[in-house]
Length: 113
Figure 1 (cartoon, one colour):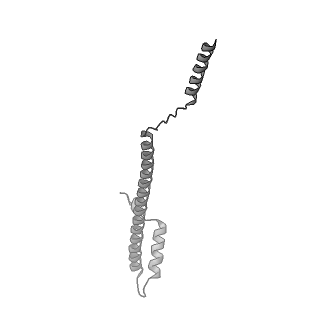
Figure 2: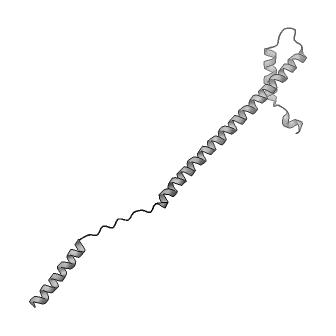
Figure 3: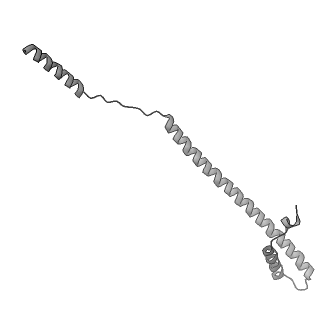
């Protein structure tokens, strides 16, 4: 890896230096303060990496749940599509009654004429 890929951001460097100066003890040399700032900087970088990893895991989990929801919805729809709707045919007695009346009328007309 190149040095630029591992170099910390200027914000992290300044934040680490501020924390190191705030916790500086009397009689502490600048070199010691720089070393403490580097340690703090590494801690900040490690914390950021951990937070990024946690965010990635949360995103993966969220996406996985969304896919499961979509798959469950598709499965439910597929199950509904597989079930054939029951066709209920209800025959009315009216056409048969009309047919019988018309035949009776025809026979009566033939008989009386």
